[in-house]
Length: 445
Image 1 (tube, helix red, strand yellow):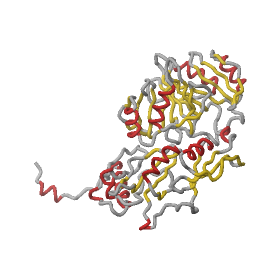
Image 2 (cartoon, rainbow, N blue to C red):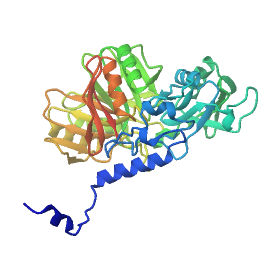
Image 3 (cartoon, rainbow, N blue to C red):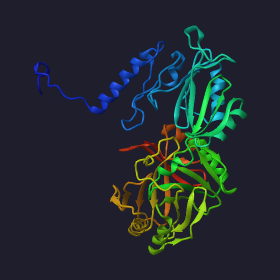
Image 4 (cartoon, one colour):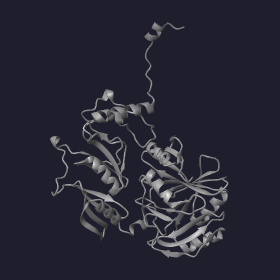
């Protein structure tokens, strides 16, 4: 056995720290340096997260909320600039923004010893809004009733009229009714707490250039019971709904990809509608490849043909009214908003036939995946994978979430199932079913 004193006399050989540990330590130090006055760092619990998580830093636990002062910084900003509102009656404001604008709380609000809100974070249409109770003693004041405001909050939505109508019905004051302009449709309201909102949408024809040939332009979740599915995914993902083409349908509002729910179906799957440059020639290709295709019908969103592939899987193709894009305005591969479709898995019986069919019809190209008989479709949005060797054909979506732990809890609370989140090279995922057995994935990417 070596003499310990001799070992202590040996030169110290420096070693590089573990990169993951160094990153976590740096994040904790940076987080501690940005904490507001009133937080005792020695009593603060900062929980590390996986390096692949969307959150690069950590945040105080609820146990430290009582000592946190006004305007505690967020650990997960979604943009470089985030509005931070002072509100007279912040607790009521949290409820109002949820009711009128569909806001979702990120984490637990920091509650001060007197019961007021010291800090809260809300997600609205994929953006982040912070707020706290007003504190005139330090110059943080809410808008005064009847007086002007120096800042207008801009909110981008798909349906301006429905958002403004809902806000006004909940007690907002309408300043300017929705109207169409060269740059899109917009309107203005003042919320009950004095803050001014400009609600806008891009011109109706601007979306036609964002979808390319072979991209997925529309999806519909086919389920047994529409109402149950709508309630479930509203609770889990915060979806809101607009009118659909029939009583068994729902149209999800405010997502990057057009998404519907269609009920009274014997089995659950995700129905896909693909964009094509020329629907007449695409119909011919479907039939030549062994599938079926109805004659195209004119719809408000373009020419549409309902089809099935050579293994009997139903799908649709459509030619947008303004034509397709060339790639410069392509949609995000993994979506951008909470609740967006981030990835699509086509589980099929015969992957070779599937690749041959869609390669012929849509021009898809493929590369091998990381699992047996798994294939990745190249350069298509949202991203699509094909998995062969299944008993039946089923298409399964992955939905993007900002906090997978919270989303998993919501799935289970609503009667669904969800595996514990698992870290992958591309993010953290969970395999889920809803309360009707509809399969889907959650991904914090």
